[in-house]
Length: 322
Image (cartoon, rainbow, N blue to C red; front, top):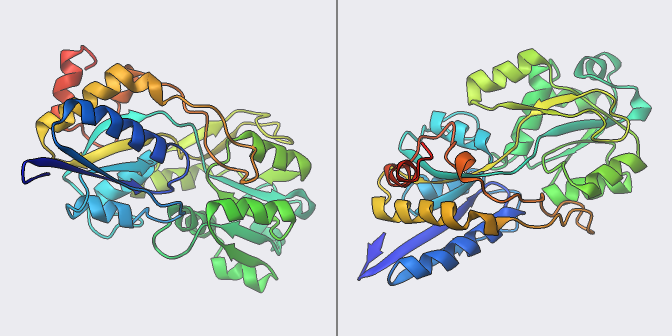
């Protein structure tokens, strides 16, 4: 947005702000100042497990020019106006995809003998499940409840079995599991060494999402699935199929200035390798960030399910990437 001869770019998190959001935003601002005259760049950073809804609203209502969706499935929800979102966002346009390998895990302490959601329902296991906030602004908590309900378990049933829902942010969910306050967890950010070490120290069963439920999530929300390879975690001899939490999508609206979208796409193609980082997981927070690979321009153009912004598309076609 231009104001008094200056170009204002407000960049919002749409989802958990940990990991690459701050890094990508600062990197982008640094490069944009070199190619955009009189740039004013606002980076709206929140160390929070919310802003899945609020960040999207800032973008849709024109109070932000750019938003980084964590993850693709969230952008699909926004496009459709489903899940967290009550109104569709048809003017959402993507500039690039940033690679990020992640999934939603539902794990239960092995002492319950629960290996599937069907086991959980049959045994009426009194689990103390920790997951994301249930406030309409956190997609992890929302999906946790969807997994339970779509596998035939009403969340309130857990209490009748003697169980409990422990609702909190992403870092605290892992802390509750580590200390033994919780004995089951549904959370994203389950990729790091700290999480693998935690699961090795307290044996868990990892509940696969049933195929029909995965299909329901895809049909209704546009949320895809991913297969975690066998033996990624301790006591996980088989591949695990789970809801996908991979990739971040950098998006704007269709009315974002074409020249600005073009310049951002050019920065990503020419300098995307600079976003690679090291794995900081395993610190006292348990989850900090996923090892961020360098951006491959050939993959950055795949912004499914969000169509490319025309300005970004022009750059990619010029570079032979489309």
